[in-house]
Length: 272
Figure 1: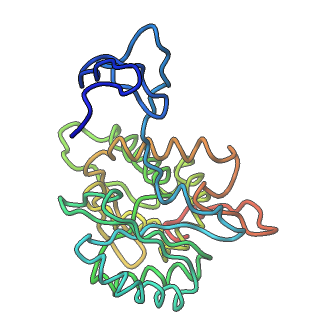
Figure 2: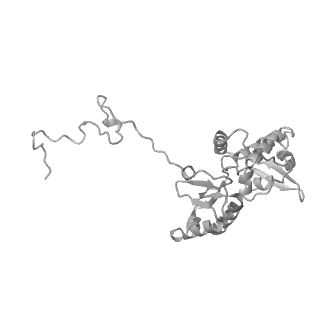
Figure 3: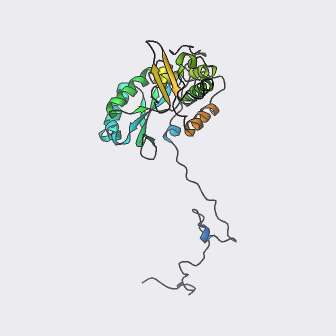
């Protein structure tokens, strides 16, 4: 039987809700705080993203994200991770797959992220292997947000010159790629574009049909129309990239420049 009094001094055992000096080993609830007794500051829990925990990129490397439908995550990882190890060995680059706390909704379906890191020549094959293993998926926007926002701004400027009665404002892709802002961001994002296996600005825009309508007008011609403005989270990610890179750097924060590589100008034509 539990004792109801102290065996030394004989004082009664305090009730459960009776105020006592707070412990300094953890947070103290407000309802237990005594103004005459100091208490430690409250701690805020913050989840660290997988991307933030990874090592810095080596020279010449880039980082891309392939979105895998969450119900296919097991097919990419395999039993005890055997499939993921095999994919990394075949592609000769790093692949990190996130779990449920780090998912993105695409058309209402949760997708986990497969983070691919390596030289552009190897990341292209890694994305193809991931697509085959998962039976689908799509390229993540990471690293491409500034370029897509520049295209959006160029299309918005072009739309202002059209009559207000027109519901669709199609702009030649060659005119969009000649915009100074698009040229600058295209030069910065070139390693990411190469790492994703995208050969032209046309192929950069095609994965985002919910934002850009693209139609081919010939063997080497195309037109693009802004379907829906890019979401605010894309703008926030673009601002983070801008804060983490030098103003005149030819690469974005998702890539490390190769040794001896100087600034490269993007072509004014749709081809890169």
